[in-house]
Length: 311
Image (cartoon, rainbow, N blue to C red; front, side):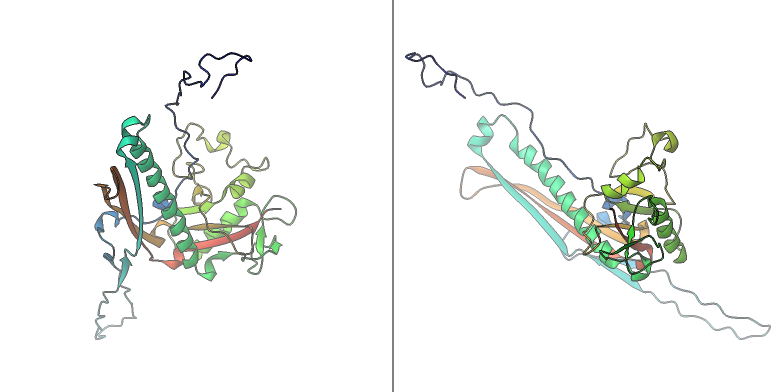
């Protein structure tokens, strides 16, 4: 920064007398909320330590029944000890360095700032990756509409995306969610711990002036402290509702949503290592961390995807 001088003025011409003042506040980038930890089975978080670790989840045996008449010789069923294996097969790392001189004269703790940023980036990448995985596990029978650029107001259609809105020939968000609930009902999915994740576009339509469902005067949660993308502390059509910008993109439709039950997918995640080491190339401390995780869909029938367009 320089301050102009009158022509011919020769005092302190280099402007070195002007102090450089740095704010103690740091401008941090906006952060997306994560929802995966709220919508998956995380019972196995503490059971992993290394890449390649496996968690073996025993399946409940299916028991058959038969007709009985007096004197019938009973047949004994052999129990089957089937299992599902969750493998820790995903790994991400971060590493950065702060020079000794930089640490000595810096007006901020750059190591602390960078660790906070790394923690967010790891969580954001994990959230996006798991949501994309879950979308790929949803069976075709649990799909509302289709991944198509063509839209329709027929909620039963399997060849076009739903035309979301309140106009004639459009599907309202509540009708859309009711269809999702019905599809889970058909699969005998329990009513409790159901979830529904959609992008901001969906919730904007839900909050339209024609819909009072998100109005605090009707939901009675104006004082609630919502976290992890929860749209409302209330239940809508049997679902806990979340807003996310980490949903995968549709191929042809403009938007998609995911819905299901918490038991559908198991996740196991761990920051396996964090350490500070001296750099071999300079006078600096390197900070690095390793994130390990695995995911496994346990019940595909408890997962669903819906496609819609907004015009």
